[in-house]
Length: 324
Image 1 (cartoon, rainbow, N blue to C red):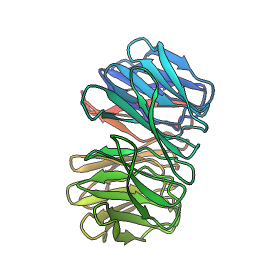
Image 2: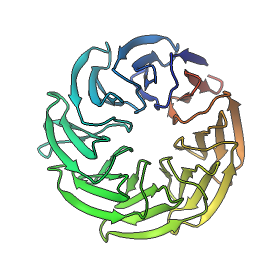
Image 3: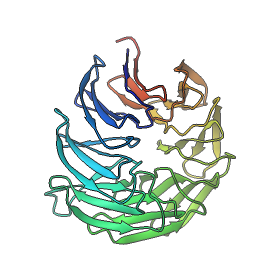
Image 4: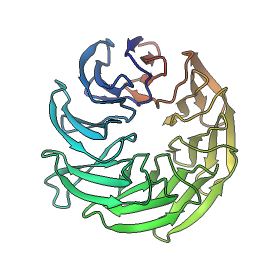
């Protein structure tokens, strides 16, 4: 439908909200783009590359930058509301949660200062910080009153969103750069030792391990009703059974798959560093459609209103749709 040019590689993933696409670029800008027309609405310049995906909630855009700051921007105008400093770069998306009394919205973000930060969405003041033993590269998943994330300390961490206290810690065997998926008390995340894990928070134990990829997992998993889909650095998209971790199918691409797949009905959409965006059938892993952008795609797709939006290392944001 359209493509939108920035002046740097796009590692950030787009977020679609209220007819706008929000995305970061290595040119240090956060952009708001009109979803239908593909035209710039605003741009805000940070101090360094923006690899993190934005988080939009209550009319604000919260996004981390490699300049160590978390920014709060007005979604309509791009005006700066506040910025919050950490002691390391922020490469993973922020997430949000309600305060225990339900009156405030808190923003959760991991940093290379080895902490998970909880920040008040209105004031930009720290609510609490949770210390780990190494970088926090991925995004925290939020559910059941917990924030769940993996760290480069090889641990799966579960933290109470109310006060930042430790709920559980599970040894994943190797450092985790990916963002964890969290559903029904189960954590799904891959590690640097080529193992994809399902762990149970209540027991603190690993339920199953999938070792069908011979390279690390940097992609975040999409959890479906009966299956889980994950991209691997072994140049494959993997689909495994949710209950036992057994392989259902593997889809080959020509490059590493750090892009996180999105399940849409009976299809999966994902990018690859071979420069292609793929649509794959969820049932059998057969290719439905692909589009060759030509340069690596590490960005993950955003899907809304029949449209797919994704960024590429060529510096462009692309929007696709079927017949409108």
